[in-house]
Length: 410
Image (tube, rainbow, N blue to C red; front, side, top):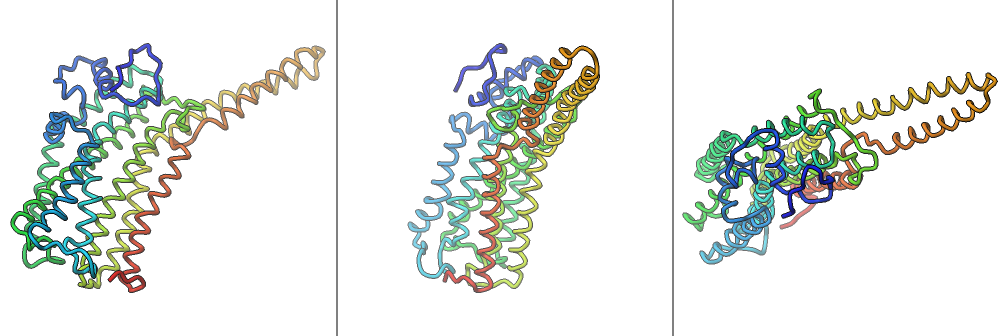
């Protein structure tokens, strides 16, 4: 963990964000008497699960490793093997656990829960990154805004709401999906009950809580980013030639890229659940329509979420660009008028000086026109986002081809 920078220390966009810096920014806007835990993680101050993780000293990497081991090898392989109903090999329809359960245990749940553990740091990194990159002209006004934003994230009812919804989702899975009559298929773990059901319900509870918390936090991120660019006291500043390739606003695009991964995991989970009847050898006439719906949902969800995050900044970047180039254009226009007057007058020296000044202003205009970005999105991240958008679409297309018989995995 890096040392906290003093106010006079130059801001470095490449330096990792220290959560303690959020505390300094918040406390500079007012007197906040918080515990050590609350000071380091203001976003999840009232999150009991985050409090437990903090006591163990776990970050998202520890959470990912634990989730992968517990919901993967232990739940999906070791316990079924010890209880004698592990079946891997042969037709996919006879696998226990089935392919959908293996995807959830080894890929989807670990990624989802790890992103939840990262989300508090990610929100802090986003807003502190804007301060570090000097993306807002008034540091004092931004710190007051930051304090208000962080207080909205750390209210206790978000955790209460997430807990209620997670319990409701878990009960729905237990009562409506995993209790006769099974809809649409029997659970893969029936031969290992009651232990296997208890572990499965625990997984649903944890995954649902993590997912709801992520949705709530990103809803607040979108809300506060939109408000940030609307406040007249917070004037945007875009830096030409900034190392992030986005005028200092690349932290917004980076956050959006992380969310595209979450959207991919969510849609992959949904697609796996939709295709489960076909994997079990129980064709569903509505399957094709559901797969199309999943593809359509992804094509709407990811661009919608992405643009919700970057669109307000894009509009302010365009306005900033127009204002800054407009000032140069006015000077160039006046110099053209002066040059015309000097060319027809007796003082040729003035004309030469004006032309030289005009060339300098035109060069500056061309440089700013080329280096002032219009979007808070570096080129490298654009390529990554295009790739992340293709993966789930290809996954859903494969499931559709299997359903209509073009591909046969049996």
